[in-house]
Amino acid sequence: MSLKNKKYWLFDMDGTLTQAMHDFDAMRHELGLPVGVPILEALAAMEPALAREKRQALDAMELRMAAAAAAQPGSMELLSHLQDKGSMLGVVTRNGRQIAKVTLEACGLGHFFAEQSIVSRDCCTAKPDPAGIHLLLSRWSAEPAEAVMVGDYLFDLQAGHSAGVTTVHLDVDNARLWPEITSVSVNSLHELTQHLV
Image (tube, rainbow, N blue to C red):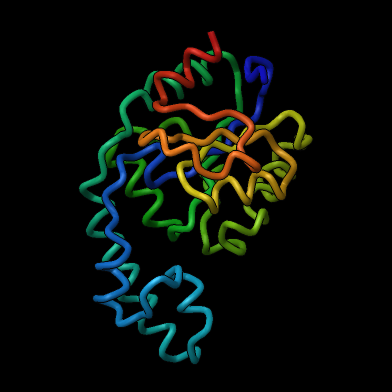
């Protein structure tokens, strides 16, 4: 599948634009959440008052990690290439908005993304729901056939597939998971850039 003519590019943040550093099991343990249940889904199932308290603790935890974020190898080259081609760039993340902005700035990628092109759990239902992708496509007046969602995890690919966009799996471990919802699989962002030249 050719990616060269795609104009609208949406990226997951953690593990895709940035190097993976979240230990979700340790985070669940620290928050007192059940093992094996995604954090946001566990919080959504709680009483509102308790969920609010846990969400504040989660935000503080993520903010500490955000300040130490490092760019994924090849991210600067890929984003520069896409920007030079006139592509629209967006982020769809399960993080909070402030955390996303701090993370992108900490790893030197913030200047690639307009404020309104960073979609977080604060403004719509988090992935795997495609709401964030739909929101950006609407803001850009773009059709799904013109767009690509790049991510490293199942939720990214599910959201992209549900939204009808091309999905790119950043599969650094070459595990070849989720082929049924992956349009293109790459082992690095360098490899993805090579698909575009």
